[in-house]
Image (cartoon, rainbow over all chains, first blue to last red; front, side, top):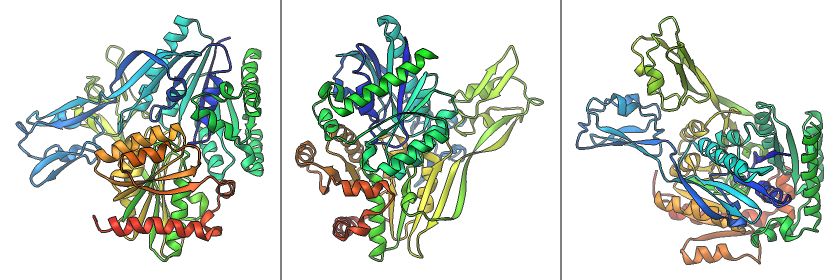
Length: 293
Length: 288
């Protein structure tokens, strides 16, 4: 049937990874991509056997060769990221502020600046108990996470073809930045996991706005809906008014956290629980609509 | 003093903690600024509902190519490190892809034909919200679809100044936006939750703070009796455990409605105040 579901959430901690883990253990075989590259966590649940590792170059950083630098300060005014300054007559580059644009290295009259690759980030692929898994780890402080997400999805694509997989689950990042954009572009459905809080609604609206830029089949799940039923109702109404498909609502259940502590998805940990039943219903609903299309 | 409230993992209670702390410090007569650095999803002001007294548009300068002057040499495209200038030499096609541009200005320097003009592009805005004559919220908010929150965070921090106590509600994760925020703080309070996910992300955040030589401590939110791995980890690594906040449906409910829990639970407010007072007394004069 071929289906690609990206699970995202504007707000963090709404239960996005718990939903992705459940989705990844409902069908028989799946490819699972953990695109939450800033805080990849699904490998903790699924302990994949890694058989592939690749360096990801997350941009560059400028470095001064002080044997060549005459401390003329010519580069200082060119940097639009305020990363170069003169301290005690010495030109210095602030590594955190440097955006890696290369301009200082190009204009330096002494050719004293070189660009170094940020090469500490990695992409991994391997097998887990329900199929193939691909994930990335962005090294601390590095940017361009959207490109790492694209690289993960490329790798996932080859795994799907190679292993003749039908279902691809993408666990996206929180937020609405470049990694979220890369996680949802071109997928055939997006699931936004939200929670019944004022912050949850606020972030949901911004996430819906992002998804609408890409004209995707968008679904909303409310997690822990019973923590505030009137707020949940507001979210359901918001979905109705804005023609967003409402996938379902999941109650708060301590077994969800227990499952995580036992390194299992809720489907594996308590397949007969209400939460599992509801998630399976949601999954079927989302898959079914596609078949009719 | 500048205190950042941060967490590797999202949804651990950063905003809950910083808004309550802001409320308590203000009540105790401190001059407080709460700067919301979670520019992709800023939520702090939802709890105070203040009206902005001033707003600043944060922009970057993107190129606009004047095709009448362009010589189609392609040097601007070559100098662009972000692939934001699409160039086909034979077909004489040249296009700026605004979504990819970081506004570094390299193309302006590359062009020898004065064929590139400047265009201001909005990345988002900073709002100043006065809660009373003493305390205010500064909110950074990206435009939906913006490639990075960093310029907004930088500006919001700059606008925060260094009067009184400044709280930064940090963006989640451990990439650039997080580092920009914590690097500007004198002390960092890391909020975590008692799950393997929480611990994994906490370790990652701690490694960075150690690299940056920062003072920090940990708060465990929604603490449970069952899972003790975080306490063990902190003990072994001699990291201060500042506070454990037990899981409570009451807290969750009030938070969900956009209410400040410390308003109704005076004891909780006092506990927060004591916790932060120790930090202020110990690290308040170390810099600035």
